[in-house]
Length: 369
Image (cartoon, rainbow, N blue to C red; front, side, top):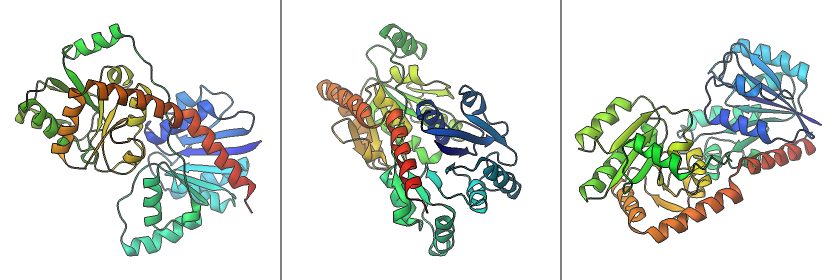
């Protein structure tokens, strides 16, 4: 049985946390013994404790930081005690440094995002350092793999393992109708939703401009902005300025978005940068088409004209045109909906992600020195 240690340094439950929880639900208990290391006070702890077979370590000095010298010291001793066959980290530099000090043979890091381009000087420094600290890098999309190479990571160290998500609950029509009424959405209004934190990289301003173009053209629609963030007030003011304040619904933070996504007709990803959008995968699990920018890993999931539409980044006119096409061609919409569900089932279920990850674990331990 292989000993695997998973390390997540976040105290909240973001992309890495959801990745971990999906892994814990589906990993093969007969082949792997798993230890999870998280910071003291992490929101993940209560969910991890639901799996008594998983060893939980709550580490000091780790909370929401990649590196801390005291954390390195603590983890080095912990790795010597556990003696893992695989150390799998998520953005924790401390864990990787401690892994090298403890002479762990297989150190893996998953990159969940696309980093900004590095200068030649930074690449010359960080490339060799990251190659030394890690035996393999997991990219959650080919776009992330390309980003890793551009940052100086050696190609033979990179493996792409696509994200996977749980099938969201499909709610009955009565529940969906009540949810739409709760937000004053009429039966004849088409609903477009952006499920993302309200930060500049997510491109909500282009979504609002596209919504304004749709309303000017007389289309009946509502526009959901689900989430919270630093741009909340600015975006609300912009919606009012555009004259669409009554048509744009800011829900704020929603713990469980499944019902809202059920009540949405089309998922929209207006991001300027995107590694592998979990929102797209969750929408697909419900048979919801997505309109997404061509940023990052989006084109690896959204097949233009098949399970959704692709548009250029920062292009509200193209986004509005795609939104109009969704409302005007019901037959095409239904075909896209069916294809989205098929693609999710075939490629993006959480179980598939975990099986692919376990195959990688066995591969790297088989050929380790």
